Image (cartoon, rainbow, N blue to C red; front, side):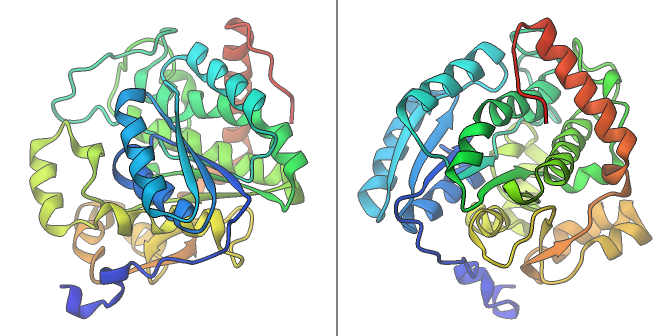
Length: 329
């Protein structure tokens, strides 16, 4: 299908001069995260690859540094362990005096044959803890530095089309193993609501954007053999899937509060008409044909003030219980 869409060969990646800038990309030793880190490094940035398994991340960082204008370093970060998140943030703050770009990319999906832990080290539901809570604590701990860095700094939260089916009753998903279906979608909704509220409260102090990588042949399907086979044929490559995150992190045309989708049209128009069709048919079949990057709207629930209030109240409550002091927005 690539002859129908020339962008599939190059993914039409943006190219900015990021010399002297410092970026963090979580979960960046494989897949979309690795491609995002590589692209930022190609533009001249110093990229901190924040990864759970440091022995896997170091050789990847060395390989990226060897072929790019910028440099990359690996630092250990386990998003499913709030102690590890704090240790990473403190180590970064001690070592680096600037932070221009933060890409909250790391994520976990427990669909399929997932046999890993069902809760985080502190006992929170694994998707909620990894995809949202870990990034919430990380972002809030680094926020003052990002404000001081200026330009303004960029914060990118990687979202998902599954938010269209997600609940905003976050209190049902955060503690203990998942009791119902929809934990992954709820965690991505939490990440998206977090980004929307950050954008509203920070105003001009930072550019906060959500990016949806789309249907990508990446490690997110490692626990689902069926989806691995399907994605190998129909899905975007990790490089193409990284395009929305790279645009969100670097493009001068992006505005705070934007939600970038990996299509050359507003995919929300399909999701509004028929969400199931859009997710099950539209996303896999149209990804390659209409690959692009467009500012769009996400699920209406993500914009509800009560969703933001309940999420922030819950997140601060958890942090208080864990003895984590974070700044209030």
